[in-house]
Image 1 (cartoon, rainbow, N blue to C red):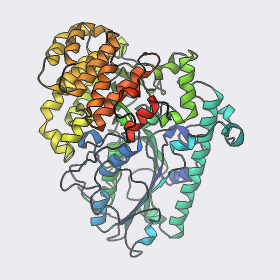
Image 2 (cartoon, rainbow, N blue to C red; image 1 turned 60 degrees about the vertical axis):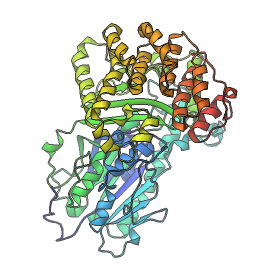
Image 3 (cartoon, rainbow, N blue to C red; image 1 turned 135 degrees about the vertical axis):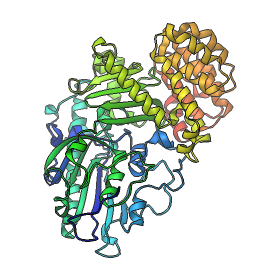
Image 4 (tube, rainbow, N blue to C red; image 1 turned 180 degrees about the horizontal axis):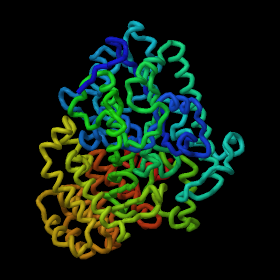
Length: 602
């Protein structure tokens, strides 16, 4: 229920400002315990408000995270979980991005200026969205406002520097003193890259300071809530794009305006352990504005006169998702509850370090892979370039870097079962649309992804259950895999073959069944069959890939196929991809990215 302000001026509504720094997890700020990354402006906001120790972006990349933020809806539920978007999703009728509800209530809404939405924005979200957008353009000084400002100085691209930068652009932060994560090689390149990023953190703090000074000059601080946060994690390798804490765990500081401090039953200057996620930010603003939170939103308010410390103690869980990033596919889900973190890798045979052209523009990424291929890394540093377990369980209290997987530890068997069950129930509850390949989802579901999921709950649950056969010992899964492989549904066969690939050589008795699927009508069933047989080392998968690509089933089928081809193209897998076998060796958009890589046109 909306609340009525008790002590604020009669009829007056608070203003809101969102300040976002791009690609910025909490791990690079002194405020959150780092040795560098001084942010005096953000620290001052925290002293006049609240610091959240556990804020999460739900997704580790901008378009998915930002669309989650601005809709308050979990991306796989509505169909906007892929970055970059191929097809825009539609929200259900009557549901808009939540700034529209503020605008309908009399707020002046502005965005300066990044959007990057994966859904149709719809009418009435912003009064202005541009590089000139500002609360200063509102019709009168009495008009309440919501302003959103993004600063890009910390973006991943800031670390796409040439080798000459080592001598020509030395960082202010001493590279010799920075802490190197145990999963990174300790090299001058990684140290320089991290030091450069610390400098960027200090720069963005200065930009934020100028924006806060504008609010102060306009006499607005006493009635304006300021939210500062990162738009997702990043940006050193294994951060942005991955479901580790470095990809999801963002800083969040909220300055409480003087007029509202007596109404917020939380101690000013305190540091809170409550878990909050991007789905919660919109509901929180609507609640603070005295508006009803639409039931279709997945989040819940975490700030307001009726939100007590005791209520926040129960917030200890967050859900994360990662699918396609540009041309790189892999379906992953995460659930964190308290200090335990569970990650489910649905195509675990793909290494984290699978080629993504944009990532490998960073010298640190390229060097990391080169050192792996030379055999110069230890186990923790090498894991990024190897196939993963289907499940990973981490105790973040003892293992903050997520390098000690506990899934095979008998002492954590009960926790593993509990976290696995929680994640499965979550995916089924939201009707996770990634149970369908993106090509199928884009064709069938995106006019209203939420309604489509509700109409196909039973099918989605069945597909998830087939995918989860990969979690069983093969002898327990064999009969069900055989039934699934004989199914009339190509979607069930798609996931049965994927599960076999995850099981790997353990599932070799399914090889004959897989060969039969090489003649399937559905192109992606053929791709998954070839992929499994290639993993077994029983058959060259490339002829199937060339065949599917030359049949021209559209960009998304091509992308999924090329992702498998990129996996086998790696020297360790021994099947280099030949673009001259294709009718269209050029492609466009993300398909072109893949083909450029294969053809050495980068």
